[in-house]
Length: 214
Image (cartoon, rainbow, N blue to C red; front, side, top):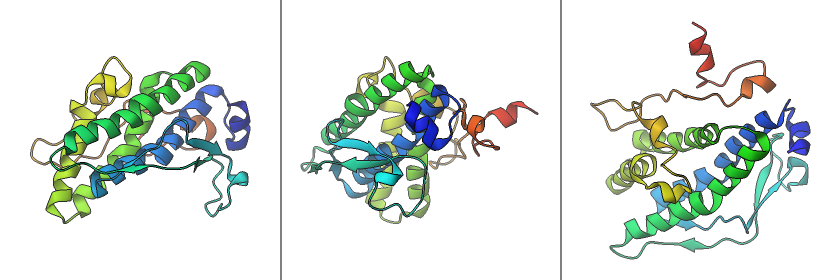
């Protein structure tokens, strides 16, 4: 954490933990959920086959980002059996959240002394665009149905144990973020601050702090 703080210019472990959670969700959560919903493919990203590498160690550093990339040591891909997509989805979601992301977040919360709610909302802001953009751009009716059903399942219906928490950590944040007259997500408004402003001259676009200043 201290090494990463130096690399990204973070002033504290709290900020570092939050930034790493947001980056990790972008690298791991977004691809798994996109593959699951759009392509009906389950990507087996586990704690054992994922490794964070600094940009300097990456073979392809086109983006020149200061944040770490994700390296995979092998990857398994699953597909749902006929008529058993819900059971398959349960497995993909549980493997991603309970067996992987939750454990990363618990450690980051302890080491960085940052509330887990902040870390989970960091993940949510990476999840929402996948489904928001998909609902607006996708034309295939079957994919549109999966976009709607999977998003609702992940953010509202999935039981707490699938996240390794006492309750679904995304449900609290997603309440009130939908219009009653449309299935499409409205512009998401964060409820917690990710502390990005502490290492940048500006706030995140969805940060609640500027709203509270007026």
